Amino acid sequence: MSRSLHALIVEDSEDDALLLVRELRQGGYEPTYARVETREAMRAKLRQKNWDIIFADFTMPRFDAFEALKLLHETDIDLPFIIVSGTIGENRAVTAMKAGAHDYILKGNLKRLVPAVERELREARMRQERRQAEAAIHHLAYTDPVTNLPNRALFREQVQQAVETGQRTGHPVALLLMDLERFREVNNTLGHHRGDHLLQQVGQRLRSALFDTDVVARLGGDEFGILLQRLAATDDVRHVIKKLQNCLEAPFIIDRIPIAVEASVGVSMMPNHADDADTLLQRADIAMYHAKQMATGYAVYAPEYNRHSPERLGLMAELRDAIEGDQLLLHFQPKVEIDTGRIVGTEALVRWQHPNSLALLMPDKFILAAEQTGLIGPLTRWVLIDALSQWQGARHQGIHLLVSVNLSARLLHDPRLPELVENALKTTGAEPEQLMLEITESAIVLDPKRAEETLVALSRMGVSLSIDDFGTGYTSLASIKRLPVNEIKIDKSFIAGILTDEKDAMIVRSVIELGHNLGLTVVAEGVETKEVYDFLASLDCDEAQGYFICRPQACESLTSWFSASPWKIVPTD
Image (cartoon, rainbow, N blue to C red; front, top):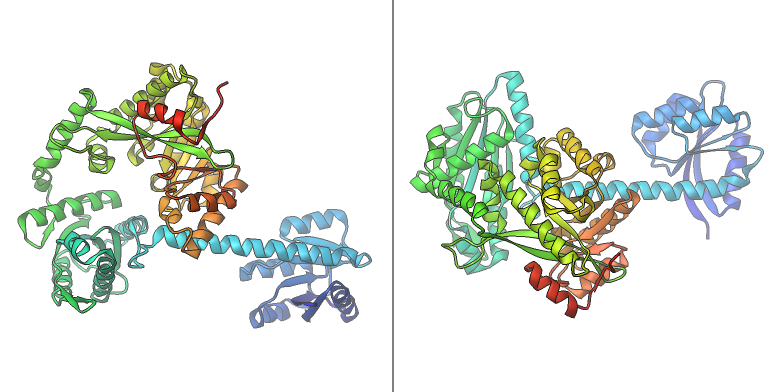
């Protein structure tokens, strides 16, 4: 059965073009073609039709292959470009390949034509699939899946861009953080599906109340971010807030149920309060909590609000005591090599045994505050030393496992981090090869140059490096190639829907392929069922981590679990 092929032939000889077409037909193609011999004619044909491939003579009276390649690149169309010529020498052929040609074939030896066409069409399809996968990863990484609004990562970038523009033009920029009151009651009473529907409607109303140049984002949970980029004066922000409050007044109808929504809004402004995105976000957050506490509906940041958070200050004082007073503990979750079923490593997860809490406090309750108050360094040092010490002890029992420790965004950009890690290794007597440090994508994106310098220094020490939550911060493939990382961990949000969502499955498949192409180990996080584990095995994913394998637990409990576990320990050296 003949295969259709839309071919653009850059050739001044009709006879040579027909010979090429005949060779394609003999090879099983049914070409539809157009012949051009000038730059203007080629440009016109590229605009008129979607082509599969371009064939070009090397030299013609009014045109040549180099000019044709240049024109193709100017149009930004990715098409296989094969030179078919009787006059090209080896040196010129090499020059043409460097300029972007995919292959060259002599007119006197067209036997290579069909195999070359098949190869280049296949490569073009693969490039297209990679672009689609990258576009899908970009969309998922920068878009909130519930509301289809920008997410926190994209919003932060947009805020920073607006700040830089405002500094050049002299126009003020306002950042609003909006938190919906009692949203948890909606989820608990009506279910998460209706809660998601409410978030969608809120996002639509906020968007409709603002100018096109303004930005509305969902930052997570019941929190929205609003960026006002075209304020004429700082006082104008109060009129916008009133407009937003008015747009939320009418009840939202969810499955015929009227739901009233109230919100607290915190405001920070450039240049009044800060001149960078992170500080603006932090100060808008402080203002929002002040508005909540005072029930004023909204609050514009003021420096004294920082002192009106005794709970936060108290928690930080207690955390300092916890680090020094043995109130912290580590749980470990193993990672399994999918192909062999061997346990190859564990991830250290810090917990806080707060004296006034019956349950262990999870990291999300204190890590952010630790970053803001400078306690993240002492906390990370404690985690490193405790994790390495415990697994040094396990090595005496014949258990040799790599231990992973998470690094915060702020610590990654601290030039003293390599020294902190080196001191932890010396203190415990552990070798660098026993340690892996996990860094989130979003932490790298904050300051790529500084992150690269720090990661290179750590890698030279012999420590392994992993990009955690891959897919949520959109680290470019180009930047990954520059970074000395050993592993990428696919975020559990993609793994959760891998069996039911074709997009998630495509993303996971593409990340695994791209990771392997870069020589990286690929780990799937959040693996909770055998079905998901088996599906990942079919995709050649390297390692898995999640409740299906084992829940996080203390080192002593975990070493006991090893003996009864169906998973195998890596043999000792």
